Figure 1: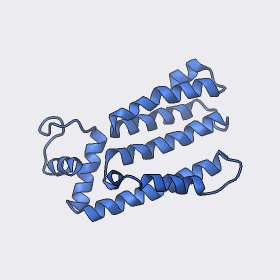
Figure 2 (figure 1 turned 180 degrees about the horizontal axis):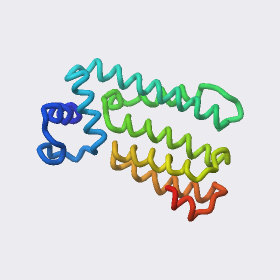
Figure 3 (figure 1 turned 120 degrees about the vertical axis):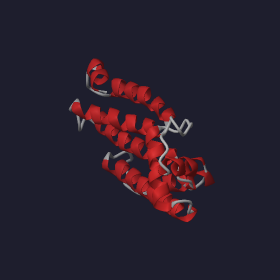
Length: 169
């Protein structure tokens, strides 16, 4: 409901943080505005778009695990389990900022796995990783917690110099 109200106010021409006093992060507010202009207050369209995003996340998670050889046998059971867990909570059917932030975290996870497996050792790829985590945290500010964790993982598991990792991310 909060996202629909923020989207409605922004669609009516009000400015975020000036006329709309809310703690919603900027990218999340803009997507709520876009969603309001697309679906207005129709929950069915919002749920359908969210289910489509969930399906894409589950498919990408399965492809990510298979491509990076995370398990001995390739299969879609982990992505099926991921999809089932996404549908476990009724709150996840709503068009929330966590849905979009987790999409960017999945892309960042792909970059981290490539860096750990020594396939993409170019330091410029770390910039993309930092940008993906930054965009995820612009959807939901609490996702900035993942940045120090990923830095620690890269420092401990990557062949790159820790100062280079800190410089490029």
